[in-house]
Image (cartoon, rainbow, N blue to C red; front, side, top):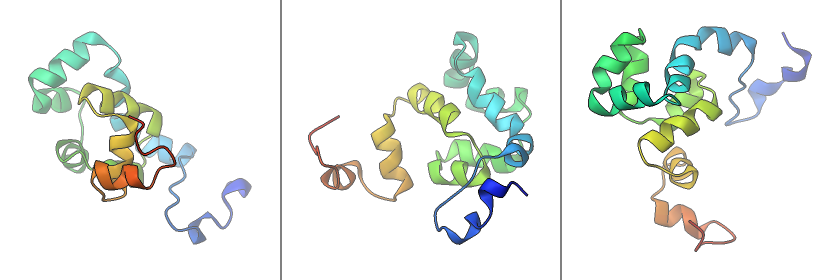
Length: 119
């Protein structure tokens, strides 16, 4: 085990993205990474199911994408930086994603920010 991650399991809400997670989730992370390319974005927006099929996503991965389960994707081992690409494709800001991850409406989430009027 990576010495830097020793005891990490005792920190609630921590989902480390290490080499092991990276290898296990390579397929879905590549799927999201490919959304940086116009042809992949266009296919996804036209036919999500076909885009996921072409990338070989598992049924579990497809369900996470279909439901936009942001926290589920992080728990699964998806890298947050590729999730940002996905958020842009589905026209969501980081703040909207964070609200979903916390199970809050965007409005309620923004009330917890130091600059609640920021967007």
